Length: 136
Ligand code: NI
Image (cartoon, rainbow, N blue to C red; front, top):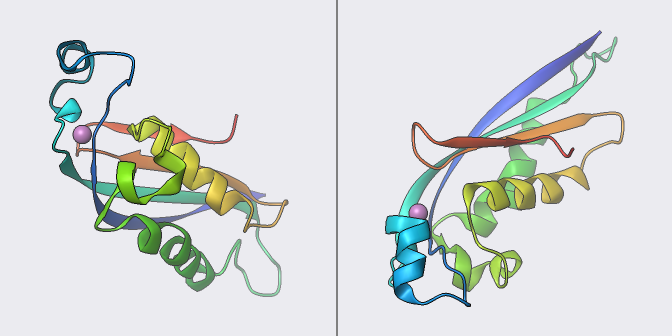
């Protein structure tokens, strides 16, 4: 019996989406407002799902406090109120799209969790646009 435990978190961050090989016109065409050369912010909402067996003693799949602290140390302190392109090393050469941010978050959390647990990361860039990565 595998159960998924979900924890929501939030961070504000600035980014710019662009391809170095393209001029501003082409970048604007592909990335729209997100290619603004002066950056802009999003209110990112994050849902981290951890799936595993229920421990018969505790009744937990994972201690929510442990998950909360993990998201805080690995994601919130690293990304909140940061310029992702400039201040977060993972995005030095990687476009900080919702897709890539979700993969980066997944990789950071994955190495901190027991192998018995499955992990999913859902990231909302806007209330209507969100992506999910499960490591596949
Ligand atoms: Ni944007």
